[in-house]
Length: 112
Length: 116
Image 1 (spheres, rainbow over the protein chains, first blue to last red):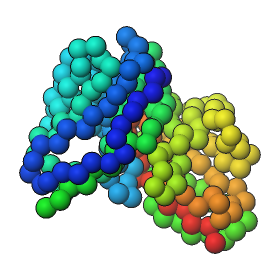
Image 2: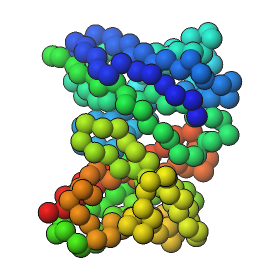
Image 3: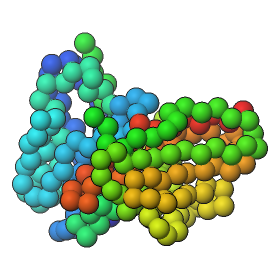
């Protein structure tokens, strides 16, 4: 699975939107883009995933660049509970159900 | 609610003893589970893939004789840290995915191991 690059940390204000970037310039045509987050002292939790089209769910939105070399996780209104480390992970479609390889992620802090 | 349960959530043990950590899929069967380790301020590191009814597959650099994995049923995998030492102190996390929704991995809440 190809590698991703994320900023080490980001800050946001409560109730404002947050855009978390991820670069994946070596992505292959069969790589899905997954986002997980890890709250302090907990296991990671699934946020969202997509292949080519933008995706929305109750937690977040995923905007995927047309060339798929980058993507952005969008939290529409950050809350204090969104403070976590966010991981952008690529996984080949043939590896569904397979292991996830975590990078360093982006530590998001949310200020009241 | 949680679909993957880990037990215990926290354990302290003396150096040289063994510790067993359980990972259960609560409402689905998991032929494959994964074990990760996470040191403070670091990312998750995959240790091994636990396969029901067969031997686990260990990542490079992970000692299989030290970290024993048993996946005896479709809902339970155990990780035993044998002869634990202070450098084994870490946060251990397991995960699994549903057969019909393999794109999503569900993670346990983690087990914090402190070896004195």
